[in-house]
Image (cartoon, rainbow over all chains, first blue to last red; front, side, top):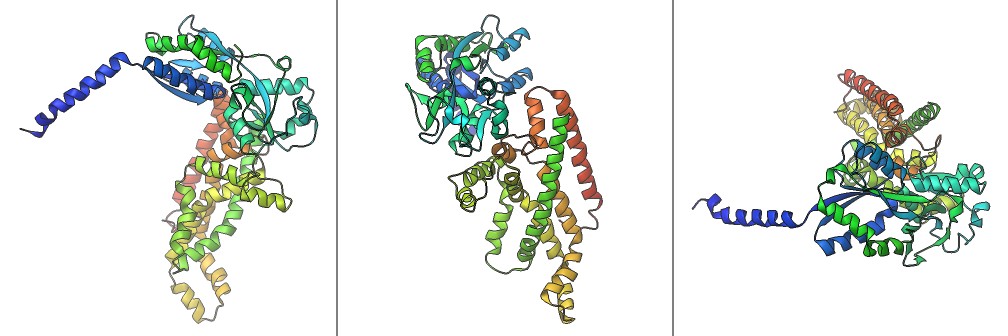
Length: 253
Length: 222
């Protein structure tokens, strides 16, 4: 008996197992805006548990994903940090028609890793108590745009501009603050919030009249137009379980 | 185009300063590494070469922690009244010196090793002092290696990206160097400006390498 024929039954069994798996469980890859990292992980885990499908999320800035999708990146679903980028992709015919919807409304927060540093009215911004104010790059990330809007409305942008350091996306803006290199920064509430309270440091939830609402839209991309798992994920995101997770991170809906 | 020029100027300033510093720091290290029989030669050589193999993310991550307010370097800086290094030009200089160190030490070390001990012994027999031997014999003989080191150190600092992205904070005129500026243009879909800078970088890098390889016969850096 040759070596090959001895292994044939094993190979056959393996192949059957692989194909059987593929038949019932689909894989979907999702481009997720950095601010939605924590909830997306929770939602993906809950969705995988309920359906047996496999979800592979990638995290980054919305602008970066737009460029990658334009160049043919193989994502099935895009959870953006704004509503303009998904709308642009829709207009360019890169999404499944009618799939666009607002899955969350983001909340901007002024946050410091230090206890008691940020007061609950944000008056720390008026004082000279810090050297670096971290924001996400407004050219690339909607939370960065919102931060600039808020500072402009507070008439502080001109004064504080020299202290601003820019993270490439909201994750890096948060990282500058969490490592203490910037004393405070504008981040997404979802990054520092769980189940009704701020998890560490001190924070001021920026009043929503200081910036345009951060509507975060989702779309199914063309690659997934016949992918049932992608549709199931969107339904899950819209459904009560998805909504509960999204709200637990401080998003509006 | 104005902000691109700012980025180019900043990059040239950074790379020049780093190259000069590295020649001063790298030459004694290279000299010691080429002459010593100490057991420390292995460990020191390995540490100097580390930045060559480590991903920039590792260097950026640790620098951010070390130079931050909770890190030893950050606390030492603060205790002597200096401002912290992340988000500053000085921070980029420190990071680049570390990051480009092997590119400067290795060619100089190779040049010192290639000359052997003979010229120095001859000089010693003519009663040249150790300092005299180093400055009038060893350094002139190692000149091609030092030139290679300077070119490589400069070019490698210009090409630095990951570390700057992680500790820079993208401040125009202070930490927004050329490579980060190109990244910004690409991310915000301003491909035309990106092309100008990226194309310029390709030409620059080609010229640097051309210079290096054309002069290579005379130098002894491999």
